[in-house]
Length: 457
Image: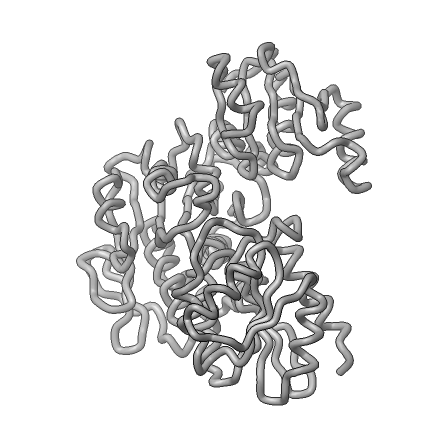
């Protein structure tokens, strides 16, 4: 991609936007950055970054509209809706608009493994990254998982490998992005406040297959409601993973052990008991990782050793500590009801009463399937955020009445702790996005852990 002397507008001044701006500048482009948030509202570290980038020649439009009509290409950060007025104006001027992930991929020399799904993608991506690192030291884990693709892409040689967690936002503007192994773990309703319909949401997910060829691989979940639809859209060789049956070609559980038969021969990976991550959802994530890495050609001993060493992901049913006989778990990564259901089911194997802290940004979702699990499992629900009144309303409709509403996470945690007894556990599993009160689910989870650490023990 030759962008030398082109006028490039980056929309969004968070990590992905900054990464894209630096990448564009390194390629000789004339770069400007737009964000609706005025300069004075950024924190000190962000202001320092902005000031430093200004010195390198990047122009910033913070809280003021940029001259879109003078731009050759617009690169949009994943957190920015394509319905943002600046983006709509660019479309109106027939200016090309691509996402940060698509932009970075055009400079990538290494093969790419790309993983998406409504739930489980962070755990699976992290696990695949650990397996690949044991096999190839030049493995980079990027995307929705934390590091922007733009930050690392120029450092990766053709001997390396990219493992990418990609969201529907990043897949929304795909044009030439080409993973040699792609995976859709599952599709359930999410982000409908942005995509509006499930059809639009699925279309974004299926963009993962857009540029794949017959020699590539796509990994799918036959248990998923959209499996048949995804299989029709897939262009690579289809491999599946299953908890319940032996696929023709894939990874599966048999006799309480994980197997794969992708090469045509059945091979044992490890037993379920050897896994440190517990719960059926995590076994499914492990199977997906087996299918992905086997398709990529990783030797089986690397897969086994990494699987049994893996302890899980921060903010995903993460054990925090015990105080006064009460266990605390951080599941802040549960940003929708399906993820919260998986976390609740995973924790229920402990057979301890759960005091659940939930609520957050409203994504136009219903909570009833999640609430139906509360009877006999959740001793009391403590709700915060934009959705608190909707959650209480749906609890009452389902006959669940042990609820309380709070303005802050700290109030909810302190009250849950005060009311709890030894032998119980307190679980933060919001079932909602964090952006009504926090910058990210990580910030929400870190604050939860900080509050727990400061509780009187």
